[in-house]
Length: 63
Image (cartoon, rainbow, N blue to C red):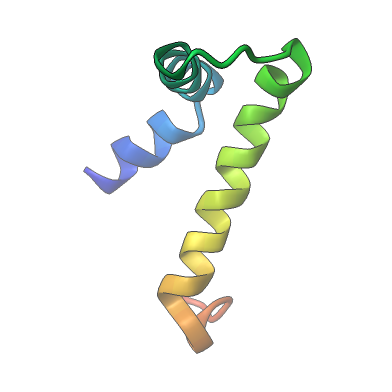
């Protein structure tokens, strides 16, 4: 399941679609530049989550 989730998170269309649905629900318009940056922001957030989750073991082999 974790492998599938990681594969889906790295798909740009997943984040664009989710963000556009949320922004449309709140009445927010999104520029094309921000839409293009969403996949990079999502990958950065995933990296930050992994660093926080692993704590001091981050970067250790097999951590």
